[in-house]
Structure formats: structure tokens, C-alpha cells
Image (cartoon, rainbow, N blue to C red):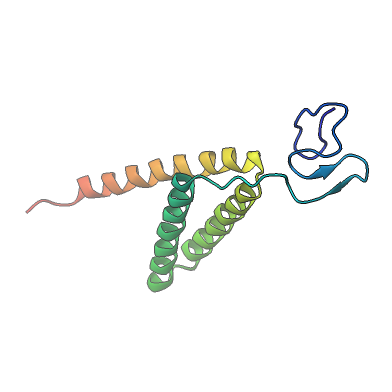
Length: 121
């Protein structure tokens, strides 16, 4: 039988799923095992949030309200996805990859372009 919570296929004789869903009472109990989020993912996401915090601070210091609000909204979305990833929602992993990877490349490209456009002495 398929778990309605995590979609794991369980034997028909199973009373509970590994995620903690009880098939008889249709409630969620504590999971049988706890799997920690890999350290590499935690480190990467903390790094992204710190960089966003630095950008938020820069927006606050420059007085650019639109930039400040955009970075604050971005940080909220990334943190929300990270919190869902910790809760073992697999869609959050894909969302974080899609959200952070292209933006990181875009920021790197824009900074490189600005660096190349600086006048040379």
C-alpha cells in the first residue's frame, strides 16, 4: 500500500510507514528513524543565507528600499524552502536548486561584468 503522506510503498501488513504515518488511525506518529540533512547541504544553504544577509545589509545602508525588500523576500523564500527540506519534503530540494543555482550564476556574471567594465589605470 502507498503511504498518503510520503508516497512510500509499504507491505499490505504494515501498521505504520517509516515516515510515521499510522495506517489504522490515519495520524502521524514519530518516524521510526531520523535521517539528518547532509552537512554539505546545510553548509551551502547557510552560505547562501549569509550572502543574502550581507546583500540585505548593503541594501539597508544604500537606502535602496526596493532592493532591500527584494532581498528580504528572497531570503524568506530560501529559508522557507530550507525549513521544508529539513522536514523531509523532497520538493524543497528541487526548489532550492532551481532558486539558488541560477541566481548565483547571474550574480557571478553581473559582478564579473562590472569588474571588467571598470576603467584601468
